[in-house]
Image (cartoon, rainbow over all chains, first blue to last red; front, side, top):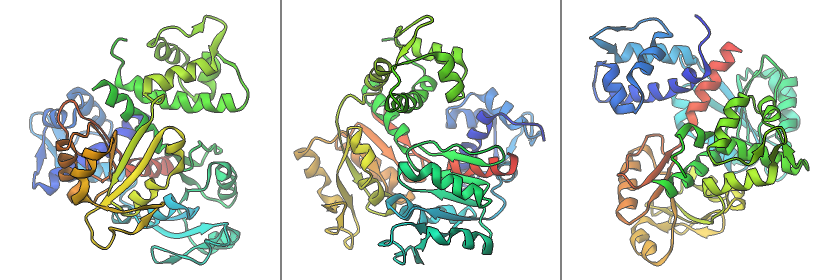
Length: 206
Length: 206
């Protein structure tokens, strides 16, 4: 498969969500023009995006909803199962630990860690919070695919460095600061506030 | 001010975060080429983006960090203060209610509502959870700028419709389904899982 542009990859989850809705509504086929009207994307961009992965549409006949959904899931790696750990048992970490919809997609938050003695041993979504001092031993004994960083801003980079030194190759970072990682490690920095700022812009400009 | 493209608006929070870091590091000036190198964006795109708002840079002298930051804050409406309510006192709603960094930027989560009798009256981040039945009276008595929807998927659209019917003009939606609103209402649909899917793609392709 040729290298796909990051912008295309970032649109794939939107296609996926849209296709899930179509499937739930019992639709078997969808045309790029319908996708365009309902998703608010340019129809030729949709065709270009989907052509990156080979043709699953016949011109004029539309795409098979289930095939297209399956192919997007495969490209995004959603056809696999992932064990995730959370570092930081604050509000965001606790919320993610209990968030059922990730698990339904194959992303399982299995354990949660904190360095605060007061939090260690408390129960979060059915699991006891473990000490970050146990991380090294834990990662030797368990297969972990993704680590979610939910620490305060100040501890985020150090936590990322530690996780990478223990062999983690995928980090989902919710601390409100970007973390940097070496080549070969995947990182996604989430900035909840960015969409809040865009909302406040829209509010003044709708 | 001329109409600014949504793509430019979506990049502004990134510029803002970068400028905050520069300011904290004591930097007074920054060039578009340095921004380009450190932010991973094309330098001419940065210049085009920032020129949308008039020139605050002199060619060859760089931008004033504090002026540029202030101007971006003004454009995004971050120079104002916002009262926010949260509808849905589940894990995500509770996490957002206690998330201090929004408050530091002028976005204040003041009250939280739920329709579940077991949650009403419980304490979340220092506030008693109110009943969604009180929403109408509450909104007549209080100024609310933004409503945050943290309900289950099934209740999200109905909640949005209700809030809009009560006069709310800005909705930040965390339910895992897009809500539709009429013209004149600003909405931002957050999909936490999208960045998780992109991460799983990156993990397989780094």
